[in-house]
Amino acid sequence: MSVIRQKVKFDKKLLDQDALKILKKLIESGYESYLVGGCIRDILLGHKPKDFDIATSATPEQIHKLFKRSRIIGRRFKLVHIMFSARKFIEVATFRAGKVKTSGDGLVLRDNYYGTLKDDVFRRDFTVNGLYYDINKSEVIDYVGGLKDLEILKINMIGNPSERFEEDPVRMIRAVRFQAKLNATIEPKLIKDIQKNAKLLSNIPPARLYEEVIKLFHNEDSIKTFRELAKLGLLQHLFSQTEENAFVSAALINTSERIKNGNSVTPAFLFAVFLWSAVNKRLSQISKKNKSRIELMLQASEDVIKQQTQQVMMPRWLSSRVKDIWLMQYQFENYNPKKSQALIRNPRFRMAYDFLVLRSESIDKDLKAKAEYWTNIQK
Ligand code: ATP
Ligand code: MG
Image (cartoon, rainbow, N blue to C red; front, side):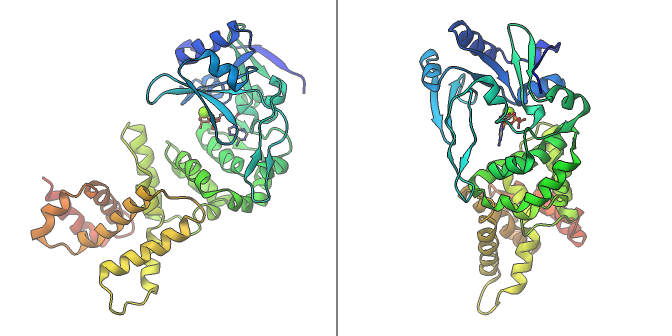
């Protein structure tokens, strides 16, 4: 496909001023530089981008020299973060070329060949994510038909899908995430390729999947994403112990509502919900001899969490919060009125209480009266 350069109009307020400053400085210093990827996709759809990425011909060292408050980071490949505050940075990446080299188990080994803009395009995942924006000419540069796919809302892979999924299986869950986020459709051929390659997800290190999982469900379309993951056979490689039920769907809808309303969300809640039926199942299997209810719950929790972390990592703070939520359910259900106030003061009370209420509204309707007790006692 030949390159398309198209003048585009959009609300300039959607552009990030700090990203523009970086671009100007790079260009003045003689480096070819563009805004790229998700931010252009979102802007063309009229959405405010979550973050802004810059691609440039400058090497990480050259970028670092130009910007005082920058640092080179090198997890999968060398990138530069330019800091604007404790929480805000903008990522600048040098154009890259060549295939990602991975070991047999899917770990990225080498990925640091520099290239041209054109090389860089073909390493990106989907056509809608492969657009570059030239600020001087106000033009989008499109080598892959991304502008058209954005117009018809199609998720299409750049290059051969099976090869690209083998190179990086995380692209399969990204396809599902963007489908939900953009309200787009995935090419039928791509759907087949995902179903065929779904098992490759088990090669991805659990730590990387943890970050991806948060992005999958902490958004406004999490139930749609969940169902699509299940349909395409991806969910079982992320949460093998989880199936949709009324509690799971209520929690996903609840999470999306909270995000829409600008309330905070924590992955502990969703992990606790996703694994709740597995914990109860485990509880019914383990030997009850000489053990208190708390000990049994702890053991079941450990077992279920251990199995989960083979697929998706759970940092210690997260598993500990999840366990607290579960343990407190027992305390809520078998409360001693004299100890209720102490439980309310527990820093995890709120989360565990929300969990109880959601249970009582979905899978455990017989808990309604107990949930009400805990609602009233806070007044
Ligand atoms: P969002 O930020 O809304 O989650 P995004 O498209 O910006 O979506 P990022 O993870 O921020 O996603 O990545 C930025 C860009 O980097 C993408 O648009 C894409 O061009 C490229 N990219 C990211 N991950 C991959 C990948 N696994 N394979 C190929 N290209 C990728
Ligand atoms: Mg992004």
